[in-house]
Image 1 (tube, one colour):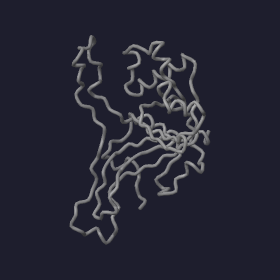
Image 2: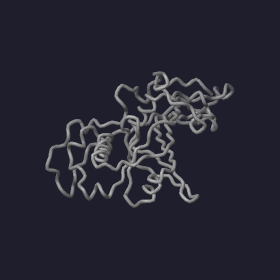
Image 3: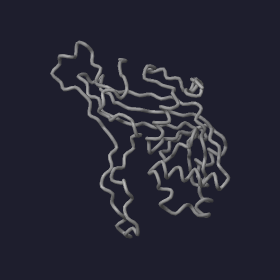
Image 4: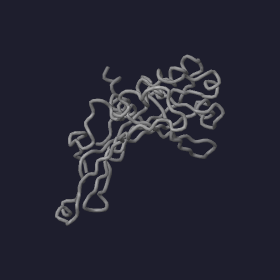
Length: 238
């Protein structure tokens, strides 16, 4: 049970720079994947590196990735070649008294592995529904599901979460002792994803009422502290 609660540290996931900020806790990584809307997926083909930003979702112990059927990315994933998936949540800009100690408060997760294609229609539909639920809970039941043509044009892959690391920073600036009396402002500017007022389709008026709760839309996982909480993550390392 203890091994299941944490990811095994591998040469690819071990954090060497500021290791005190690292974590290999599965629950923490899942929280970050669940809050992030966009993932950056890196892969290499014929010696050329690529990084693709894309919508994604976590489905139990896997990440759901998708691509156009004939795309370069789909071909790469289907070949069983490795990929690296990362998400970053920016929580604040840290302003220090010295240029070198300016920083950012962030939470990030990186996963390595080889994806497996989902070829059964029922599995593909469930994974694509999960993508919608990741964006807005209940949305998969409030829109038309993919038809046969759309399903054929989309390839869906699952990346098992086995090699994962988390790195994060929170708290104020970490200035050098000799700089503390300098006449410069220092502190943190909190950042967050905030929803604006929903704008209905202006070209074709919706034939349904605005979904309840849409104006309270947020990405932070329920129960997490706010960005300006001093107890978000202990930050005691230089």
